[in-house]
Image (cartoon, rainbow, N blue to C red; front, side):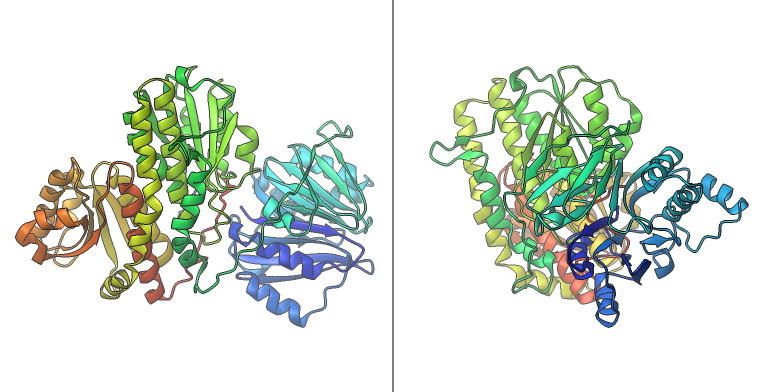
Amino acid sequence: MCGIIGLVSDQEVSSTLLEGLKRLEYRGYDSSGIATINANKIERVRSKGNLSFLEEKLSNTNLPGNIGVGHTRWATHGTPDEKNAHPHITDKVAVVHNGIIENNNQIRNQLIESGVEFSSDTDTEVICHVLTTYLNSGLSAYDSIRATMNDIRGTYALGVLVLSEPEKLYAVRGGSPLAIGSTKNQNFIGSDTYSLSAYSENITYLKDGDIAVIESHSYSIYDHSDSLAIREKQSIIESVSLSEKGIFKHFMAKEIHEQPEVLAKSLSNYIDMETGTLNIPSLPYDLSGISNVTLVACGSSYYAGLISRDWFEKFTNVKVGVEIASEFRYREPPMDINGLTVFISQSGETADTLAALRHCKSLGQKTISIVNVGDSSMCRNSDASLKIYAGPEIGVASTKAFTCQLGVLACLAIKIGVSNGSLSKDQEKEYVQSLLSIPRLISNTLDKEDEIADLAHDLSNITTTLYLGRGQMYPVAMEGALKLKEISYVHAEGYPAGEMKHGPIALLEKDLPVFMMAPTNRLYEKTISNLNEVIARDASVILLTDEEGLKNIGYLANKVKAFVLDKTDFITAPFVYTLPNQLIAYHIALLKGTDVDQPRNLAKSVTVE
Ligand code: F6R
């Protein structure tokens, strides 16, 4: 993962690099650092922890220089200490790296045998020493970088400063994203558009194998065969502003509360409000001939895929598979040539999902990515993409992106159903009306936040919990458990309520908190049977249901803590039942005092396997 940035300018760069790093902090916050070249010396400031620690250090340290690189780290090789923080340096180079060098141990051992001393445990330092060895042998900076690229194996995006060429910043891409942002007087490199958009008029994406040689007023890009390469320069139409928390204590709280608004906005991109029908941009293939749908994603995005499976099955009448990208990409399952594969990702950069996309493309699958970051790698690599328009999601735990993914997936499922004749125009309108009711329904849930905060108070000391549901409520339960785990560090398991009797029921004991999702639908009665099994074992149930659902359990109502939600249908239920789970996780984390927006060990964009 990690975020890298670099800048060559007519002016001092360290404060702009720091601002740029703030936009990349979602990629990792174990440590950070900046290096510059000044007065024929490489200077650097690094710090353990998130960027506030680096900012503090920089406020007391002068870091002059008109050229520099910066890094924010998600630890892979080596503990999250200052000694492992980037930039890594030798007496000749400074390097920032996003990715993993797979033959790092082998090269490190060779270098140690030849007398090189390492000062960190990172794979990146290997790059510094290989590069320095080539420079010492008399190769030019460019040739040394190319030779180093030939020696290392893995994935990387690199920003490189070479002391002997103090006006040139080298940008290198080998599998991890990297782009150049440019204005008249300065040129940047960055891991994503977001980090570049505040400072650049144009953006140019590097391709794998590229080395860019960047100066303050110009740059040149060379491809894998060292030929001058022309890469498309795209203008940045809108500068994405760094979101502020507003009245909220955390980005996560803000993003939870934004959901009615962003969902309405997101849906309005795919629905014609006048006719109440779908308005999906035309795709480069005919949806009516799709033989099957495969949904591929990781984490919360995978759960969004699981929820939407029921929509795809019901609306399209074709076979649907849902795959965890990291497993799918190595399984090599046979794929039907008329199959559509849908890649779901907030960041559009998740390494496993991206690799699965490339694999499916090589098999001739029709591909579509559903992403939040519009010009991400997945967008650029798939046949078509549908943006979810959630706006920047800064909190590491996905909230508004998750519900916006659900909205777009529902639209796509309906669209395929209409295209292949499985749904009538009337059904399309009926389902679109349901979608349009979602912002109001989830807004009603948000109005009950105080009730949830009280509930969280009673649960603030829990150490383990179960989330149970059937049908679409099963992945909703898994998503609820994931939210609690990642931001409050409480062990939680999401399980299909009907499967509990095959094992996890052994965990039930007095007062174990169990969240049960039970909207009144065709699975309601079955879920209530499972509720009885849980109550019979003295566990402490938090029942999420609607008024009718609560009424129907009769005397059992006295044995549960009920949270009553609006009446839902097959489309609206997953949205409405997700919101209380997000809020409960948030409020428990608040009471536990964890770092809600930057939970330990996590990062927003997972660009390593
Ligand atoms: C959980 C969460 C992660 C992501 C996962 C995939 O709250 O945010 O599980 O969903 O890392 O990321 P994207 O959607 O960017 O591919």
